[in-house]
Image (cartoon, rainbow, N blue to C red; front, side, top):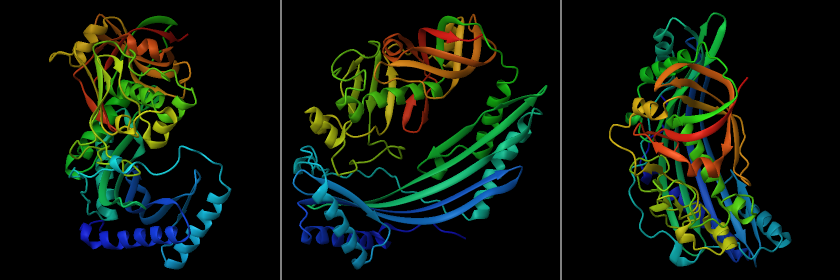
Length: 452
């Protein structure tokens, strides 16, 4: 039986000795400063289709990444060989790159006051002791449930289980050193519904830090099958403008478009419609977005970023006003903003509305929609961050008088992100947390639907 368990004391010392050796070597080689990160991970991944295994993988990978700084110059190199001789060669290679790198006044270590000094116990390390056979049986249960849910589900694209444990040591040449472990477990199922010669595919999944928090494989298979069957008989609709209700999963995709527009590079290259928009209104006045890195067992939880800078709970959007970016140290320096207020990538984002009431479940949101389109999935890449123009392929359901009439596919939904976010009418209590984003469904008052 494969084990991916182990107490932190079993490996902490080994990782830290390698990191300290690397930084000592960098100092002897003449580096002004350096950051070293060692990732050591175990992963088990299996997939089944028609009850038979299609993938069975167990692997352990280790990776040392080193960033070296000279006078306004930097170079990053990596290796999977941690022997003293290999580390010396790695540093030598990195210093040669530093010597010829272009000068950049924004590179370098953070101020010492920006480092995390209080490491919160976020309960992130829960290894799952699984054999390949155990994992295959779990995936098979998800697929079996999907196949038994409806007579229209006769086959699947497969069901998958993966379990990953990461042990990481991060250190800088000016004294920051932290070692931690975290886990992520994933189950998914992708059934195919077939009726009258038409096929529809959908998918459902669960990702959690602790395996006990995962949805059961049976629930995942049933929900995935129900979603695929609900799409049977999909029609196109005529081109029109109408209100649109984004299911939570589709709304989370819009949140990620917002995050993309508030990250460093698009901002300092003036390639985002939100460049220079700090403290201006970017959402409807009732909408707030918070980022909390300290959620217990949260998918995005962590106490510090990828170079050791302390994270904190932040209000990204407050009553519709943009209060924070996702910059990291380099981006903050480029924009002349404090890194302590504009941390690196999102951790656990929650979207809320002051207008949301206890009764605003999905059925109530259909009533709010009245007559219009429910979007249950978005595909393709159709967002221009420079202008905010938005146009993506979609599928969902046509609704009249608050009641779903029939599934819809083969359409596009189009508008502009600035307009969509400011025209957000309501957010439901039908909240879903996936990939670090928690939100209910979003009702946008008017969008252009491209149909027949």
